[in-house]
Amino acid sequence: MTSLVVLHALRCVGFADLPRLAAATGLDPADVESELIDLAVAGQVTRTAGAFGGWGLTEAGRAADAERIAAELDAAGARPAVAGAYDRFLVLNPELLDLCTAWQLRSADGTLTPNDHTDAGYDARVLDRFTDFDRRAEAVCAELAAALPRFGRYRVRLAGALARARSGELDFLTDNLASYHIVWFQLHEDLLATLGIPR
Image (cartoon, rainbow, N blue to C red; front, side, top):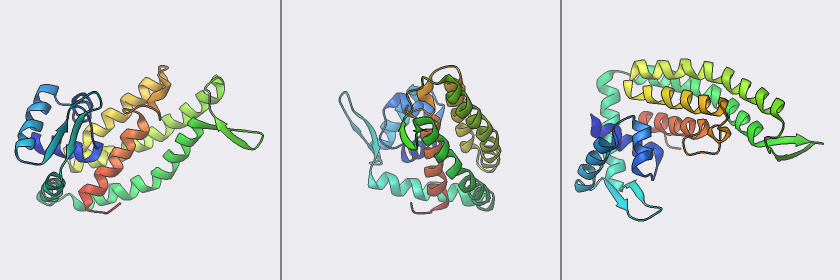
């Protein structure tokens, strides 16, 4: 099961280093590295060395992941529940994109300009909207985790990103590899991959 979690996290996160994969899976970095080595031996992942190095899926790894998550979904009888949660995710998705735009850009005299985050009142209003959004996203995450427990990690990551943003680490809404927006994007990738829906 751990190898599926690691392989599938790499599918959803994309090319990534070990700390990022450990954060995505919630597993100990040593355990993630051990699984990655086994997956590399099996020809399902590759590692690029260097300062900008990391792990990536091979075509064989992408195919193995698709086969294994389809089998997991069918074995759990969770397709209807995941499909229903995906429908509710799609209702929320445009709102999240609008919130990210509101966080990154502001309208000044009818022209959009980068948000320099010097207007604390504006930022607080957008953060409040993110908090309201997150309450509704939590319900979708709960449905998904009840259907397939591996989805539970998204709730932890989304809540963590929002908490960090609310505590002053403003890049955790849209501009960090662990930001709310990036985790939401990875959840979207996971739903598409799990349900076999092409992007």
